[in-house]
Image 1 (tube, rainbow, N blue to C red):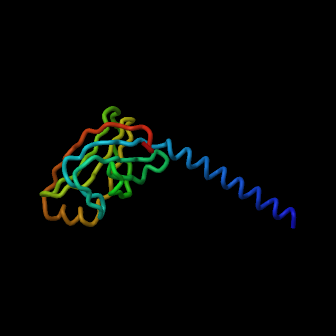
Image 2: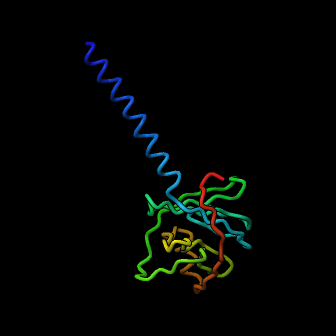
Image 3: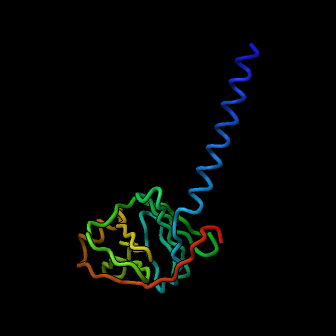
Length: 149
């Protein structure tokens, strides 16, 4: 019985240490892009009004993107995929939107270190694409390297 209790304690301590390590690595893994978006836009089913936003692409899990307003009142997470571009430029981060008539949808995020992801279109964007021709809106952004500021 004592051996079993000790094994459980050791497993619990190891689990806590692993969770702490993974959390610490994840907290510093991504790059936060901060920019003023001068128009309303959507990502998936979430509509964001014009304002300041933070766009996060996590290097450990680049298949997801998180977007939230500066005051964190509006936030969403979406699936993404790395762009097929073989040459991705580093430098000024860029956030790109697909424009259909008066509706804008988050399309691509390129970080300053060259990571570029494309947001998978949601149902509303697919419907808008059927109704209107596509154009592109691009917003240049600044970078904040700490995710928790």
